Image 1 (tube, rainbow, N blue to C red):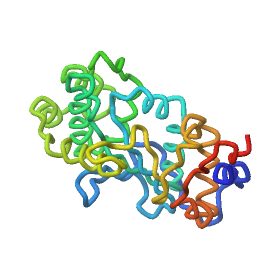
Image 2 (cartoon, rainbow, N blue to C red):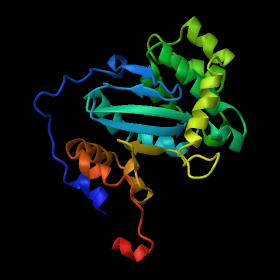
Image 3 (spheres, one colour):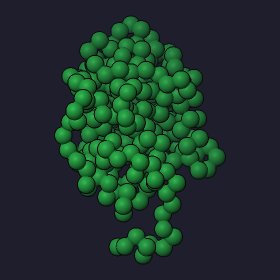
Image 4 (cartoon, rainbow, N blue to C red):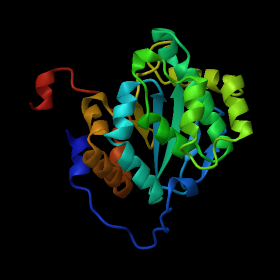
Length: 244
């Protein structure tokens, strides 16, 4: 498909005049979007925006973040080429029982107060429990917070234990649901929207191939107009039209 072909002819190297990269995630700017439901990470001037819709209990999100395109996304953020946005869903709690998604989303919002969202987000996915286990308990979230320098403070512990950001969690779930095509149902996680264009399901596998995802981000940065052509993309009605 032509949309995936964008990645395969991407250029390489840093462009003249590009800003100096960040040394670590601890240096990367973080803030809550005006909507109050999305956390923004990266240089505000970055030309490419990758908006991720995730549920912290979702094993496919974990695949993206740990072995798929997630590392390429973080690297692009560090290079100041891309800014990332995260809307945290929590529908798996209702589907599977428990409260791990909600508790993790609340804890991540609390981590933003300490400017440690991106680091903590990475730690949580590196230590994601089995989907059915509902392992993101208060105790586990606090234990994992100790892996992030400066995060486990009395204020953070209180926010985790009291679900300080319960309204953020609820509103973020609703924001996720509005992206779906059915009332009250989101599009599935992870969903990636790059420069306001959702990655088509037909090439959704690119999210789990780190090299290809990185090449796609680079191609979109170099030729943004071509990517925007896919904003209203509709797949062919007949599978034979795909050419394979």
